[in-house]
Length: 461
Image (tube, rainbow, N blue to C red; front, side, top):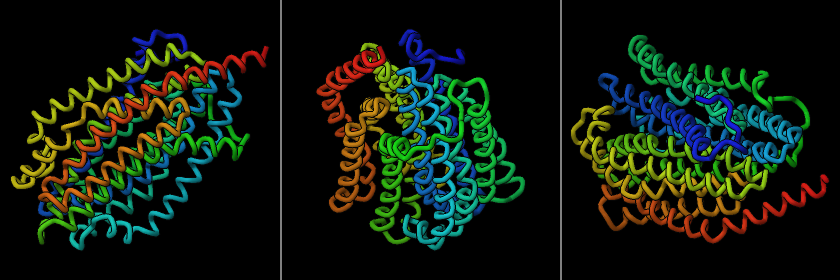
């Protein structure tokens, strides 16, 4: 695999797969070890189902905390890529320095806040008196090490955006493989249960973090972490660009939290935890789709950002066609897998035949519109890569709005089992609107950028 990719000159047909596949694989393995955590927990003797429900309550809250790494990482990486396209390495270095300071500061503040608010958050987001002890045990340990998760995830974006996709993949693989090895040791051999799962995850995140820091403080990468040159203007710009990917992740997890709350409210007496266990397994399956999909559309942002900085519209359009084809191909494959392997997937988590049956039906429903979702991801991430946040924000918000509308309306008129139709409804309406916006705006955006680059070159001359 080629180590360094030349974002402005390498043939698009080869460049896109070279960057997309490592990013996709890294995200797939990342979600795999998250699922393995839940799989092991679900099979803990005597209390696996309750423990899984407890960890399911933690999941969206922890991912929401992790979303702050995207606020800084995905916010700063496209800006760095654009500056590299402009051949302005000094400004690119300042962007990385500011992003590093922001990540360290935010991670410390968030860790303290999460530990202080543990009980009210978990109870508000779906924990019951039965599942709370398991949720708290997992949450407290995981959050204590979240600084390493935020730094490794956020800083990895600055490795990938410089064309080092394979190095970015290695950092994720290191943590993933380590977690897969440590999970059974801490959970079953040392008999630590959900605490063991959390400890294994934190140790793995520490390893990934150290690897990324080694790269960004080393001498092999063009733009390295430096100190100084801090600017509120740069920080504000990072936050502005990063707000859309942050919002996507944050609201995705609010959606999960809202789903858990709705299930607890409308479920027949004594069945709320079973419905949440079902939803937790379905959410795990959906992560197998959305995380690698985000790896394709997010990893290839480096190509779009660099060429947007250089004002090369032809390469941008050519790249987006290739990326959309990859995204749609991947979601088509996952649609077929969801219909063929739903039962097998459910049985990895539980042996309860009633829950397995619920999960299989829910997976089939949730993936009905997953193919157009691939197009949605590339359009939103593409606009973000080019710094066009007013488009990416609006399109992302619209899809979430459709989801929440369906989530709160469906249980009022239909049986609770039909709640999972909220996913295909939003995954169909959102992409249709996104495609319309893209077709009517992309040429104008690219022409404006070409003119800005011409003026920049004229001034330099």
